[in-house]
Image (tube, rainbow, N blue to C red; front, side, top):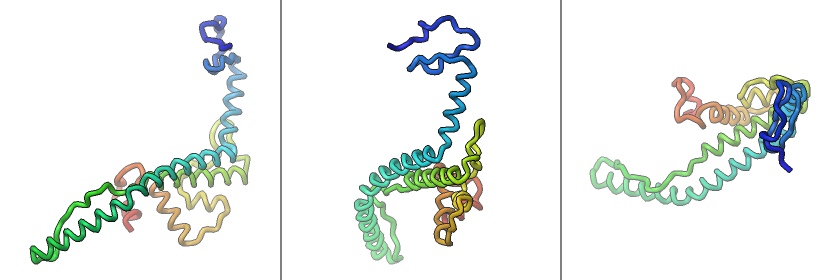
Length: 193
């Protein structure tokens, strides 16, 4: 049966309930060793890979959702353009304003998750190539999020197009996927160019 915390003997400073769900009682040194093993295990290449796979699955669900909006948006955009042309012909200026009456598909959240997944995959490769990067008290992987720098650290040779795409994904994972605009205008040109 399950061991509830009220059924435990009076706790001494050396006894800790690690988890009420499984009712494990360990002394402080065993608890610290369990935490250290769990921390090291979480940094194993297979765990970086598993996290990446989970992020890809979530991104694919978002892409599927966004794809359901594409056709309706394209048709609404064509109708709005035709309306603008009609208004422009009527007013003699050749321009008009019309509403695109459809929700636009939003792929940005999927790109954010794909970027996070790629970061996890690359960090897993780094750890697989150098297991000494698995830390006991702190993660030994560099605390960087530049996908270009991580790809270079894995030893991958990246061409111009790959570098361009990795730079764009890094912009998405570091700010534009979370915020609508960067705090400094100089960074905004990376997305707009």
